[in-house]
Image (cartoon, rainbow, N blue to C red):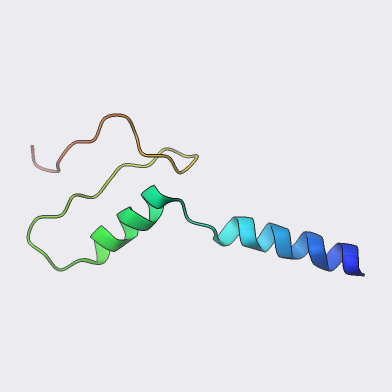
Length: 56
């Protein structure tokens, strides 16, 4: 039972973890400022090497 609970907890922690890019993206999307720098994140959660401003 302990092993199953441990595996479930590890899976849940990995599922809920957000990378720095994902956290930054979420904060910018929730921001009410006129100009936001919303980063593009890779599927792995890293910052994409090329970042562009929307509308530019």
